[in-house]
Image 1 (cartoon, rainbow, N blue to C red):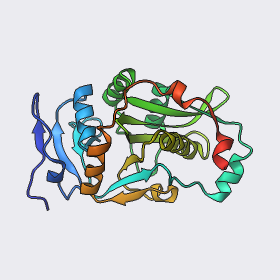
Image 2: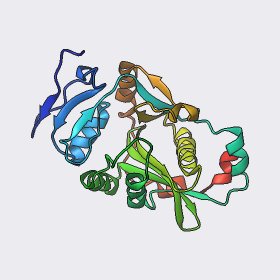
Image 3: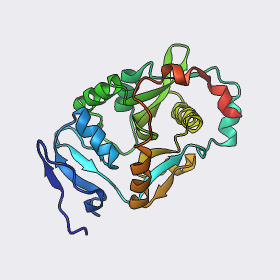
Image 4: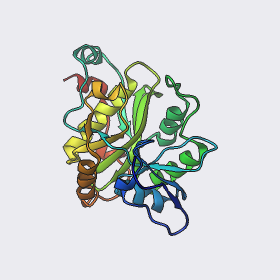
Length: 243
């Protein structure tokens, strides 16, 4: 077990180095603090993210290894691509951010009671969105939201937070569309945080924490300005992802 204990954060107390995180539970680094934009952005710049349940203090994590998607290696199965050829869904960005976060909070997930997307988290990421740092990708069937993903962008690095499907494949389309856009913009990675059984089937890979932190340190310094992605992303027919 790591020799370090989680740091209790208070006003003005910085995060400890990410490699001070515990081995058990894997990645727990600090406790407390706040969800202000400055604190959140500082966390992401150092490979740290908040993850806690209602009734708990804010818990900050940097697990080892770290799951990531390379934006040119997100995989959709041949069978799913065949179904997409006939899809009428459309994909946009930053038009329904609050709705995507709300759907991610409400969607039932196997083995999970409740949600880590607490009201305080919704408010915090909503503020990051209004400041141009947090983004959503929405999959739409007409006006109905059938899938989506949201996360935080700093420089040329995107830190994925959560995704959901209201219709089968909705989250896959959101992820694949996000990866396609980011690859075109020169963003090489999407942070996927913690491994689960589903992510590797879509192409996620694990990186040792130090390798991840080294990549993040360089990517967050890229000269990308905050702001909405709506016009830059445009409207993508989901059927285009079948190609």
